[in-house]
Image (spheres, rainbow, N blue to C red):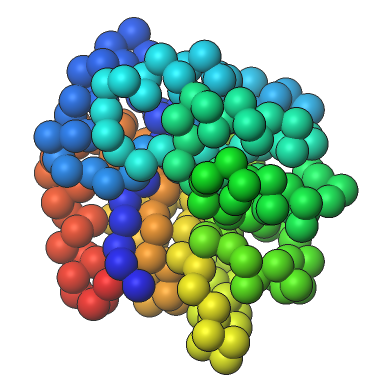
Length: 222
Ligand code: DX5
Ligand code: ZN
């Protein structure tokens, strides 16, 4: 699988968002992770469609949109129109995950499902063959800057095994608490898409941090 870094916009300084995006582009970052929060599915609020749409014109990065909202199926078309490439919703937030995946694909986006720390992979087993990516939360969703939950690596390993056994194609993404130390555990367990908020956008030198992560990926042959 191919290593992709997905810095989380949540950790950006929104007052200078254009410059922040330019820095990520300069560092040749492939994905931008956008955390959408509704204050219901998670206790926090972030930003919505208007922000996604308005920053779309400033960068060509793949928009990896992580919806932490209830009934995400309500907004599939609108996020597609706003320029979303990957639509990632929480299995805990919808009553009909299969219909949501179908809708996402019909709208021309890649489909991904996220699981909270307490949710086992068995909850999404039937859909794995249809997914482009699975997101394993390594913190309780809602806030940046939390501590990485090492025990979630069991789920990453389980996903690797299921992919091998069934010839599935999904990427494995991890999100929350990733830093130059914890990223090693992620690679060793088999994750290849790495979300990092504070560790990248909060770094003094963004390019140096991006390069540091890329070097570690190389060491793990990812
Ligand atoms: C948490 C979000 C994360 C968050 C990660 O709910 O899904 O994407 O921005 O931030 P860090 O990398 O600082 O833990
Ligand atoms: Zn996220």
